[in-house]
Each structure stands twice: as C-alpha cells, then as structure tokens.
Image (cartoon, rainbow, N blue to C red):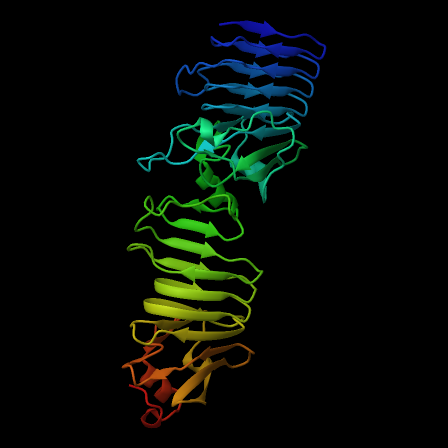
Length: 399
C-alpha cells in the first residue's frame, strides 16, 4: 500500500500492480496511472486514491473501487473496471469523465458495479444545470473495454452529459452516460444521494429510463438504452416520438399499457392493443388496433387519419383539452362499396380526424366504439355520437 507524491513539475506517476495506493500529483500537468489489477471489494473508495492537485491532469485507474479527484484545472479522468467515485466541485475547472457500466446478467439482474460523482462544498441539485448531447467523442479515451473480455457486456452506447455549476465556470462532462448503468449511476451530495433516474426526472431530461414506479420512459431519438422484454414484462411504457415524422409499432406489453406521444412531424403509427396514441401535431396515420386502444385528438393535432380493426372492441377516440360536443362538426363521405369515411372537424380550427371505413356492418362492428371528452368524461357510442350531431343513424348503417 504505497503513497506516491509528485512535484510542482509535470509528473508521470504510476502505482504498482497490487495494494491500495494513494497518489498525489500536486502542481503541474500530471499523468497519474493506477496499474492495480486486484479487486479489494465493492465498497465505495475501497481501493486506490488518485489526486491530481493543481494543473491540467490526466488520471487513469484500472481495476477496483477507485477514488479520482482531479482538483483544480481542466482534468481528464477514467476509472476503468470497478465501482469508482469521481469528485467535482466549485473551482475544479473543466473536467471530463469516461467510464462504463454493464448490462443485466444471465439471471436478468442489474449488475451491482456502478460509478458515482461526489459533489463537494455543500452543492445541491439546485446549484446545477444539466444538458444532454447525443453520442460522445471517443478520441483520447485510454481504455475502452472489449465485450469479449467480459461475461456481461459493458455498456458503451451512451451520450454526453454536461453538468455546470451555476454562478461559476466549472463544468463536468460525462462521456457514455445513459438512463441506467452508464458511466455514472449515482450523484452524491452532502445532503443526499440521487440515482440517474432521479436526476433525469428532476431536470426533465429527454433520456430513456425506468421510473421509480417501474414505468419505462423511452425517447425515440435516444438509442442509448434498450429494455430487455423479459425483465420488464407487465411494465407500462411511455414512448416519446421526435419531430421528424416517426414510423412506429405500438402495443401493450404482457399486461402493461403503452402510450405513444408524437412530435410535430407526420407520424405513421401501427397500433396493437392496450395502447394510447397521442400522435401530436402533424398529419398522422394510425392503423391496426385489435382492442382496448385510445386515440387522442384535439386542437393542434393537424389532419389525422384513423383506420382501426373493426373486429376488435373498446377502441375509443378521446377529445383532449376542454373540448365539448359543441366544438365538433361531423362530415360523412361515401367511399364506395357501401363504405363511409367520417371526417371529425374541430370548430374554429383546421384540425380534422378522418375515420376511414367507419361503419362495418358486414363484420359486426364499428371502427370506433366510443367517443369520449376528457374534460367532462362524457362518452358516446357511435350511434349516440351521430344522433347528438344531428345525423340520421337509420341511414348510416351504424349498429
């Protein structure tokens, strides 16, 4: 167990391959390497400790639960294998971290190996700003793990998180960060510790993750995380689309329900069952639907088309916001072969929902089973909806 102390110059310091060493870089732009290859346990900071001191330092740990403190200056830190702790606070300058976590094991359990950032000097969440950039710059990384060297795959598909301290020029850049088991899994403060998922929720970051209640939150423009189907059977899922026009299949998940929230693009959504679709703005196309689906429509939804499977049941159109029946106009267009397309119009706007082949008398069902208003809770069957809007159900073939 060695203690190694540098000088005021630019030092290159290295530990041995065994023991629990402490290395101080002191002043200068130092390169500090922990060459230890022994695991001494999985407790925080139970292995080697690396202190950069003043200057623009590079700290590299290899194996074990190491402690890396770059100190003042613009430092680069890599923890390698093990449960590492990185220190950051006011006066630390511009520091960069690269590290990694692991996938679930063969029993579908999350790995216990995770890394933490420890914020010093009484900092709290309210002292921070966090932003996310897709991907990360791989130049300058000293050690990238090879999946073939591990029984559990290391996770390397993360993004770049930029953590800045308000009222200062101090910035921490975290490479390979994701919603779970990325570079950093815990954010430690003097007044408490927060998981990555809690950080995402607190700052409203658009990052795929699993909420505390088990709900999967997924962003289509964030491919850093995947969710093992067998691990999350029965979980509810909320999928956030992009503004670029998404093509997506949405269905319930082994007892769980799925919600799709679209962006401003023209989305194409194929729906299965137990799903809620809010395609957002744009001219969207929604098709499929075996049963128990809800299609949300309201002001700003654009020109949407709906083509659902009439042999199913309990498909509902939900009018969002404060819409009432008085806000609705209905136009019925003959489409040949005794088919009808219903065009639902919102008064005072250009928004329309076209229900294709709305009435399916031949196969014993209707495309939409209910029209519901979110504000009042009022619900109408297809025939009630027609009657309420002044149409004659006897000549529309509505069951």
